[in-house]
Image (cartoon, rainbow, N blue to C red; front, side, top):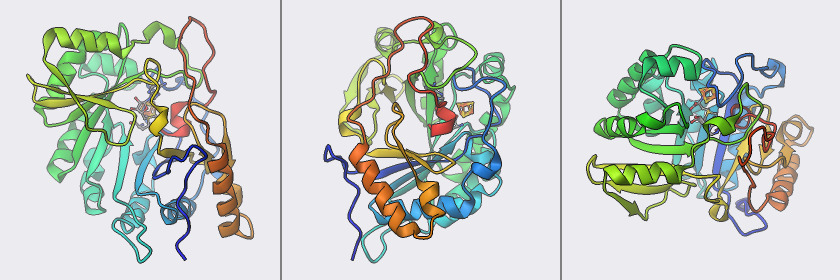
Length: 338
Ligand code: SAM
Ligand code: SF4
């Protein structure tokens, strides 16, 4: 018998899993983590086989889209083995279960090495995070001088036939003035772009309020310059899209702070330690690692999934509304998986 699909108590079908394969990263973006980030002890992180088993359970329960993330997914040594194993689940099995899409979010520093392998394993589209094209600004924002590698990675992705979406966090006083150039450049390269509001996740060394830039401000500025037409299409995610006549490209806005997008939520996240978080903006979680390592993994995972579906919250309640406010949740984005 085909196991039942995952549906939460608000009748939302969960078809999208974001799986963090590591919390480690080769960059230190200032809005994401402190320079001296404390990473998880390796023993706590799921093995490759465990990451695969978690994914397999989700696919059996109706997940059709799987995004690998982190931390930086491409710094995990055995990452491509996982991508290959998951790639074999693209298409439908005898129960009608399988992935429609296997994808990843990466900072792009190691894409040049892995783009061909990703494509060969069945990946077709990837998200690459890039907040600036200015080398000095990149070096100060990411605390590493890695822009040349990222641009090389983007080139390799294009040559490998991977469709790229650029994700950029909009930051007041940092990349604010550069956003039109970044968008025009990306559209010129054939990449879609999505802008993201900075979210209050985890302690960092600065106050995020100082650089919080509401996207309605950015949108108004872009409207002075270009013709933006709302594009009704959604990709099942939180972004709202416009087409830009002058650049011929598509631009998405992810507005967790100025526009709540939770009603159509179809996703859950699993950390590299096997904690299933039902919401990026909440503390609710169930422990899949304990279930996997129990005497009855199948039964325990089914129980854990049932608990998760019963507890998934209706909406998050982020706010960056005052200087010095504590993060909405203590986990960094790199822990939960962006
Ligand atoms: N390292 C990979 C990367 O940067 O693409 C994947 C993980 S990263 C946590 C995923 C996304 O989260 C990136 O686009 C990053 O810009 C974004 N991000 C990190 N911290 C954030 C925060 N506090 N608010 C909003 N976006 C954040
Ligand atoms: Fe690393 Fe991505 Fe966080 Fe930047 S945003 S520090 S690349 S995990």
